[in-house]
Amino acid sequence: MALLAVSKTRSVDAIRAAVAAGQLAFGENYLQEALDKIDALADQPDIDWHFIGPIQSNKTRQIASAFAWVHSVDRLKIARRLSEQRPPGLSPLNICLQVNINNEQSKSGCHPDELPALVESIGALPQLSLRGLMAIPDPEQPEAGLRASFRALANRLQQLKADYPTAGPLDTLSMGMSGDLELAIAEGATWVRVGTDLFGARPPKS
Image 1 (cartoon, helix red, strand yellow):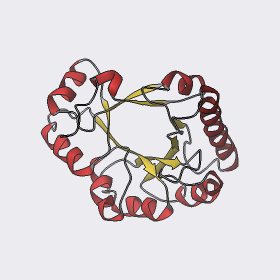
Image 2 (cartoon, rainbow, N blue to C red):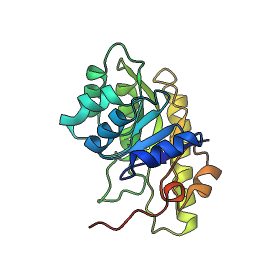
Image 3 (cartoon, rainbow, N blue to C red):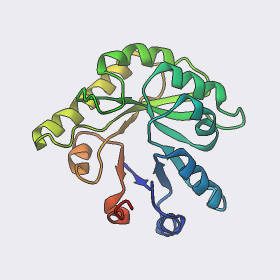
């Protein structure tokens, strides 16, 4: 299990302090904010930058160039653009498919039933490495519901790996945040996305 420090809205100095403590994987939601930080921290080449926010088609070129991981791919069009726009000198872009595991209208992500077709198509794209699945379960669920959601995602990944053995490593479950990471880890999370517990509460919006 690996820790992804969610650094959206956090300062460059806060990220530098985390790097000094040994943290090297950082997740960003907002592209322009992330690009500014990547530039400011260009002297830290060991940082792995992960994009974890919703993806607009007009932002794929910059995402494909600047990040090592993308956790929030939810449709084939976006995956194709990332593949086409990944600079050839870089290693394949690691991607996770974002799944709307509880079918919430307010959340991004593909429906679980769409996964087989997406895995089959995206697994054939060059310049991408299909690593696994990401989900943000409904936080209003009771603990049993959260656990069931994480387990359902883990079961989906195992089935996809069995059905599409050449689609990619399919070795990654990006699930769990500050409020539910213990449950996610118990159900097989390989990345947990933690912001508040690392950096403290975010200041209120002005």
